[in-house]
Image 1: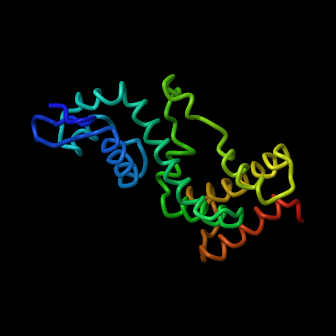
Image 2: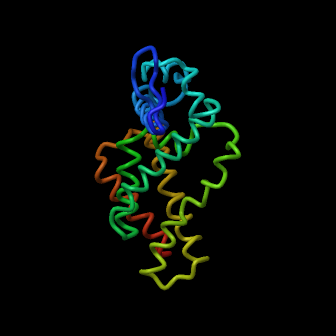
Image 3: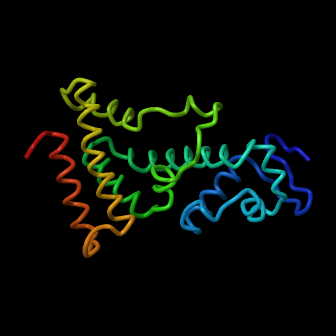
Length: 194
């Protein structure tokens, strides 16, 4: 049975939608520590319907995971761009990665295969929104901003990688002190301060 853009699962009389499937998938990614133990059958089971129903929304698992990754990216963007300063962005980026480790890994590390043709137009430079934000508050050219943002955020991403994969010798005894150091170093890289 179709209800607007939603369909009802006959077996369990539950209503599903593309948004609900993506939300459930992201919840499972968080709970199951990544995508390795997730497939269409397990997602459908969680939703209470047959896995074949998911094909009404996504042609395959790869397409679903790319859509889930874009949603995770959107959620991260909503969080990190709450305030319009570079310092706040870096701070919130680190906090998001720390508090949403599996979603961060989905965005940056998971091999989702080839980008489906219908989603290629959704891929853009990750720093584009940051550059537009900083053009309003700095005197740097767009080219200089792109270089500075890429360098600073590459450093932040590297530090987060060490944290998420336990590659920091001795671990992180104090998250807030570590975050402060990473933010200070990233800002130094951005402004070319030694």
